[in-house]
Amino acid sequence: MIELNYYLGTSVILFVIGIYCLAVKRNMIRLIIGIEIITSAANLNFIAFSAYARPGFVDPLGHSFVILSIVIGACVVAVALALVVCAYRHYKTLDVRKLSRLRW
Image (cartoon, rainbow, N blue to C red; front, side):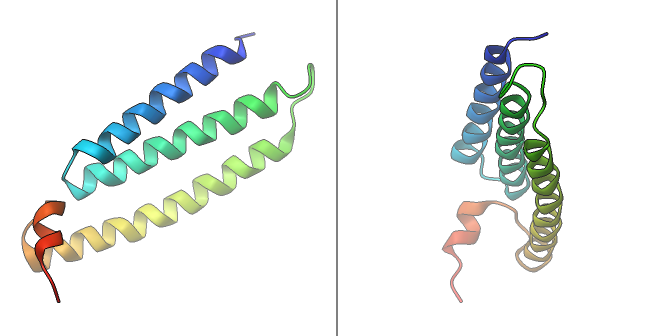
């Protein structure tokens, strides 16, 4: 069985990649992808800790949280992509810095 440290290391790497996407990228679609990478890191932590909480027993509560998180994440991404499409149709750009200069 794979040790818990490998799962945590992978989760940290995913989290750093997601934070890098949020900090550096200016495209709205890439920002959404970065947020999804961060939630994948959190989901991996939930699964790893639920599997290693007690030896020989897997806690189903962690799995149910991850399934709920995936469903909510899919809904959030659908709404965010709809907003991206509307912003692109109206302003003809997906650059966050250009969109933040626009005021109502």
